[in-house]
Length: 324
Ligand SMILES: Nc1nc2c(c(=O)[nH]1)N[C@H]1C(S)=C(S)[C@@H](COP(=O)(O)O)O[C@H]1N2
Ligand SMILES: [Mo]
Image 1: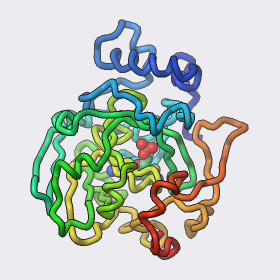
Image 2: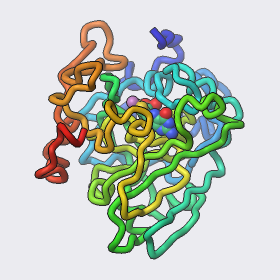
Image 3: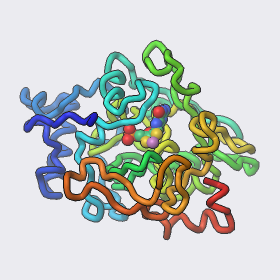
């Protein structure tokens, strides 16, 4: 078991308080981490917040994706059980190694390729240009057959696409993560091909569910969760949700994606959550609920991770067995 048991004072707010109180505490916690709080603030956080993009907080919940509908996973699990190979392959490693001097503020993100408005922005400046952030509670399903529910803060990817103003020839969006072996021990080990890259078809990227997260639980993203900005595509397996993005490019050809480069027979380009298409080495029919406790340990996996009504039209006529 990689998760240590939290000390009582570290118990995540959502695990012990009703929804209304959670709303209040997320604001209070953020003020504390921003340095406005009481001296006792250290007791409330298990790790110090070194940096990230702070623009736009606190964000308002988007009522279409409320916490009241999906019970968020306790914050301590979301920030302690991670996949971020740049900082190690163990689930408990990113929290440690992404917080040993890796700087995520300031952070420049570049919009490039087939666009009318190529640009470089500091992430805080980008958030202001976009018009702020909102909160959305989404399911999250890793290809390794575990799941969480995460309250993200951020903005729809569609808004960023509008800002870049792609040319008609642009058919795909390519995402590139940071490359800094001095700060990232996993990059020094070359445990994957770096920088981590991902891609979406243009219509997937423009879908209302595709989201750029700059925070979770009402606070700027912890480094281990992909500070200061990462992609969130809740109907796709976790590996599509590229962290710590430095470049977004518009292309005519389908971009490569890191896990497909590593193991093409196991990880495709689409990576849509699909309980009927098993991974070659395990079933995708069900998933382990992280932080679910002793009696609700697993649940059936839903087509497109529960977002079938919204995204199925994107894949009409596409063979989802071939295009895994
Ligand atoms: N740059 C980068 N992005 C990444 C990864 C990674 O190793 N490096 N891992 C992916 C995988 S496999 C998953 S499941 C999610 C995990 O996100 P989380 O740690 O915030 O839950 O990030 C995805 N994005
Ligand atoms: Mo994953």
